[in-house]
Picture (cartoon, protein in one colour):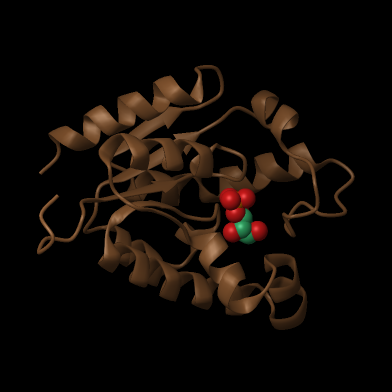
Length: 173
Ligand code: S3P
């Protein structure tokens, strides 16, 4: 990588628990570029995401998220977005200029992955997988709108998926 050129950019989108962070980190290592998780950036600057939702509301979080995405794509590297980033038209517009991978996952696989307290949109739900499914269906069209490649993460090892995505990205302009 020459120091005068920014690193290549690759953005990962998809529903909660699709593996965006773990696949993204591996792909970045394979491509030898920095990795950014916009949720982590937002939390580092503004505090835990559940608290942002509780104190300022989802719309405020989406604005912080749009700014974080704008900064991250300008810096380059592999960037994993939160599951709801595609809701925002301004964020989607930022993505149209970059290669975007949509990570899909089945509800069955998600059932094994979700847990913990970090996801305000699933917190307190009697049936979090059903809620997850509904949210995914509402957003599917937006993921498809921004995506250049779709990869299902339900069954294959994350490492194999990362290799496929890195190989695909190397072939893009
Ligand atoms: C959200 C997904 C979360 C996080 C926030 C909102 C969503 O990220 O950005 O809790 O609206 O789907 P993950 O997709 O990494 O869980």
